[in-house]
Image (cartoon, rainbow, N blue to C red; front, top):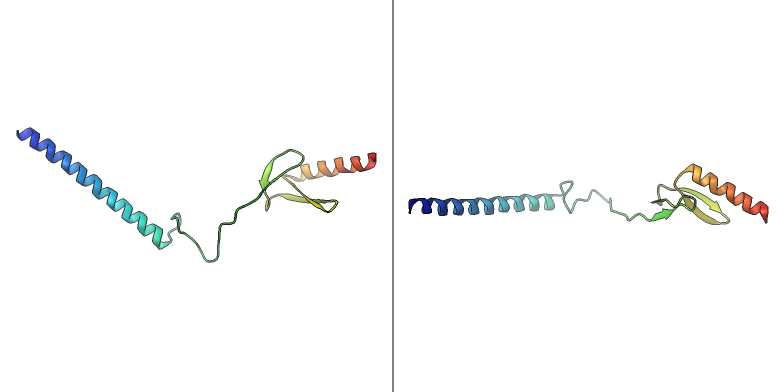
Length: 102
């Protein structure tokens, strides 16, 4: 009977310890969320907002890149986006060949 009482006491202690650790973990997560600590879900600094980036497709190689990082080229009033200077130059030379052929 003494052994069984020790086992029950051990299990109850482990359950209480687990609940206590979970409660402390939730408390610190709540503190980080409400205090604006970097990495917390509600972190915002000044007027900084997350802006979704539109991905643009390179017409030469087919690579996708964010619009703000792409290299642009205006062709007949239409803006084209490229991943590199090489792709832009390749497109421009192909476009000149097409124009020369008719």
